[in-house]
Length: 208
Length: 274
Image 1 (cartoon, rainbow over the protein chains, first blue to last red):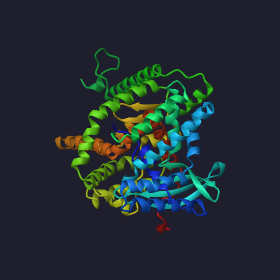
Image 2 (image 1 turned 180 degrees about the vertical axis):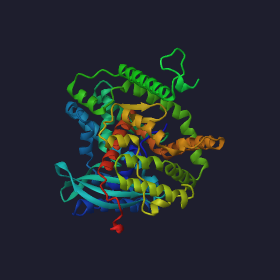
Image 3 (image 1 turned 90 degrees about the horizontal axis):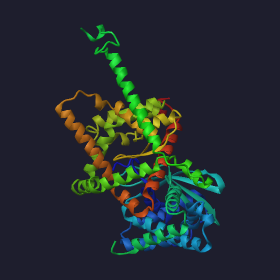
Image 4 (image 1 turned 120 degrees about the vertical axis):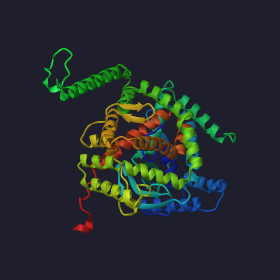
């Protein structure tokens, strides 16, 4: 199948957010959004390019994801109009599953980014208090990728709310995935939750 | 009796070449019209719920049912043909060699990019793609080494679908083309135009060139598929509705590419020239 998404597709983006979503276990210092992204990228690159085993690298990255990403904000956006019809229990369950699913997607791609370099190229102010930080992702023997992290102020620091790679928004694409799935499965959030449970369980099954 | 001496409308008359050409064009026009009519008959009914209707309009996918069938067919064929071949290719061919093939394929397509840059009214981009072609075909040993990138002329995408977009032509309905992947009415037409813009299709046919063309096209398919092996595998594994995920990513990316071309206002001559 010649999927004509040119050089990268959306999962490349999922993978790419690895570079933007991790940090060390220490809190991020106050500063500009560009500083935040530089710090994130720098810490993550040092983990990926270290000699740590895949398991060890994941254990180092995982707590950082929780600190750097606004999971709940992204999850709510991804559910779209179905967020309003979900019950409180469904929302809670969905948020937990989304958290795991996104973390798994990022972790799965960690190894393929050895030798990566990140160069911040600019920032811009967006709507609703968001800021876009553009950067170039360079991997050995791969074309450079133009990326943009969308961040929002969170106390003294920032949190990631979206990643745009080659013009494709990670959260918008994920939202289309979920909304289409729900629409084609009776319009019920519980069916999405069931599918996400299977997805997470399938991922955690060592036999897979 | 020559064709030119025949009277149009005569029984069994051999019409002049221009008339034959016009006839073929009319026939093609009729076929396209019939195709569009058949396609319109496959359109899905619009939802009545306002929110669902908004999503339907946003997706630009009135032929979703048909497209999903094409997607299913394509992924099945891919699973048993292209993907295994691409995996074997990755196993057998070292990465630097694959990279060189990718460079060659990209360089061979550079004339198409050039003509589309001209069509989009972007002389600086056209200059870049022309320079890329010249540099890579010579210093890059027939395109196998992307020397132009290091000389300050990185690759940029362009095709006739994007050129039409810069002219203000909307994408039209989303289409999933069998064995080709995501597209749209505009981009599908653009793909046909790109075949006409490729100078390789005008080289006189000889046995060697036919062989080269086949090898080039097959290599392009396999190399392109190999580049996305892991990404597409992960997409199939992680997406709950891979069809909708691909559709959204494709539409966003095409819009971003068209916007980047429209917004490229760089000067035509390099800064050092002034």
